[in-house]
Image: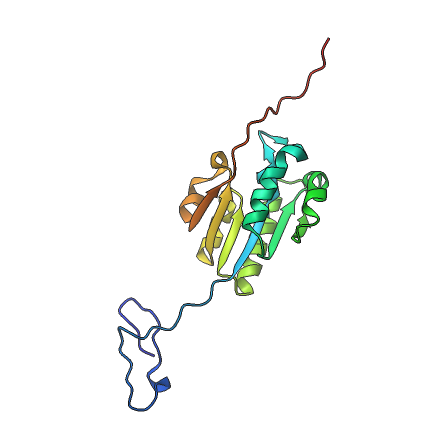
Length: 181
C-alpha cells in the first residue's frame, strides 16, 4: 500500500493493471461514503428556564429538528413527563424513543450510548440535538453536527462540532399564570 506523507491510504500497487504504475500524489482511494444518524435530547429542546414548554410553543422547535433529521435514523431519549406531553406530536415522525428515569443526565447517557451504536453500524456523521457537553466524547468517533439553543450550547461541544445550527429563538413567558382577584 502506498501512503503519502500525510498518511492517506493510496491505491495498492498490485491492484493496478499491468504496465500502469501508481503515482503517489494522484491516486487516492475515494473517501468513505458519509452516513448520518441523529440523537435528540428532546428535553434540551422543549424545557426552557426549568419549565416544560406547552406543546403549542414547543411545536416550532420540534418541527425545526424534524426538518433537519428528515430521512436520518433518529433516536430520542427523554423522561416520561416530556414524552407524555409531546408524544402526540412525535408519534408520526418515525423516530425511535427511549424513556429514561427522571435522573440527572439520564437522557444524555442513553443518547451517547445510542451515538456509539450508530457509529458501530457505520455512521460517520451524527446530528446531535443538544447543547450538553456529554456529547463531546462522540467527536472522536464521528463528525458532530450540533443543533441547539444558542444560550444552551456548551463551549466544549461547540468546539468539537463540525457544524452548529441554532434553534429558533422563541419569546415566551415561563412564569405561572395568576388569577385576577
